[in-house]
Amino acid sequence: MNQVVSVIDVSDATFQRDVLERSKTTPVIVDLWATWCGPCKTLGPILEKVVKATNGKVVLAKVDVDRNPGIAQAFQVQSIPMVVAMKNGQPVDAFMGAQPEHAVREFVGKLVPEGEVLDVAALLARGDEASLREALKMEPQNEQVVLALAALLLSRNDVTGALEILQRVPQSPKIAALVEKAKDMFVPEDNYATQLDALLPLVKADEEARKRFLEILETMGPGDPRTSVYRRRMTGMLYA
Image 1: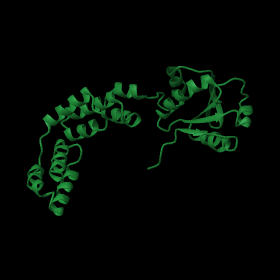
Image 2 (image 1 turned 90 degrees about the vertical axis):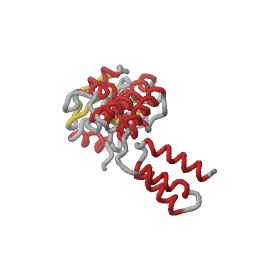
Image 3 (image 1 turned 30 degrees about the vertical axis):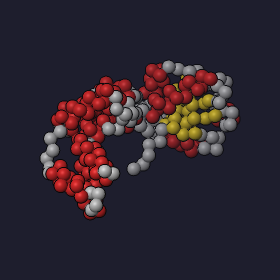
Image 4 (image 1 turned 180 degrees about the vertical axis):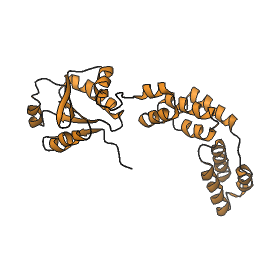
């Protein structure tokens, strides 16, 4: 699977390829900045966040003007931060100075075919499974997203899927409560528990029994609430 390119560092030597040529197929936003520039440090993370939310539909090209005087001269930079949007090898929009996130999102949104940049908050507000999974990719540890997606899966009786999502984040009271709800809803459709109960007394002395026990746990997976229970029982038996 090809990795989505969202943010790149550009130099005088790579400007032709990474900005002018790339902008013929994908809009490129050029962020002209410097290490000593305070407003640049405020604007930079906002630009990166918003551009990454386009999932590759827009690329951010970061240019340190002190190290790349050729680019700075080409854009006739007089003040930074300076941000220029490029399409088809030509500048189509620009602004100077630090801007709030909503203004940056509007600026970037003009370059996106759909005309909208969806951040985590927007995806969370949509609330459908595809949007929530996209939000989870962007912020895997976001508790609100995890809770919303897990609750949606539980509403469809996808208990295993919900538990797998819930176990990705540290336990909090809300996460723990939903985990318990999911476990209460879980109805096994197999005889794994019966097999594990029979194998448990043998795991310490019988290598084959221990191997089979672990294979069953692997098949059940982390989304099965019985998995953690039987892992603890096996540990207790091995070190008893």
